[in-house]
Length: 252
Image (cartoon, rainbow, N blue to C red):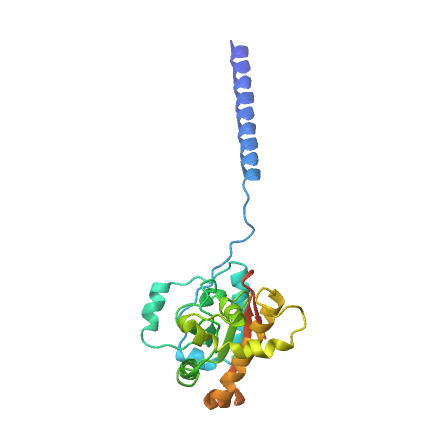
């Protein structure tokens, strides 16, 4: 009788050990089948810039911030922002970092391009990213009155306005608008890389770059206020080209 009970107890022990082994095996298999990230990225959270923080900035620091923001844009690594809160926080005043003159092109999202949020940038947009009296006055306001430290004229590849200026398009008010871009077409007549038409991508790039550089110089020559600020080191004025295929911004 006691022998039979002993045998039954041994069999139950073996069964328990077997079940435990199976459970361990299942846990090991489950663990190996799940990818556990080595670390979880911590999101950057930005707030609206204050007057003191803006005052502490230099043109060089703002330029580096734009470059870093563009790198994040290229890697889809955007800064976390509570836009509703930022709207409320910015209602008392604005202390932007830079003024960006950009083309009207819908494929170029300026704030996203530099990973910036509400209150960070003044943005002036016009087809062909040229400056005129209205935009010069806007830039002067952005820098002299509101304290921005950097002015960027940003063109982009495959620009329809540049193509139209090269092709001498005649259509409504577009005709007059394109006169602002014609100086870049004229300056580009020294091009030696093939046909000087909008179909030649290299010529198009050349005109686009000259258009940016001419407008950077136009800011200096037609705005004594901005020229003086740049000479004092209070601001910096420069050009840039946005690559429509990749989103990369190259500063000139």
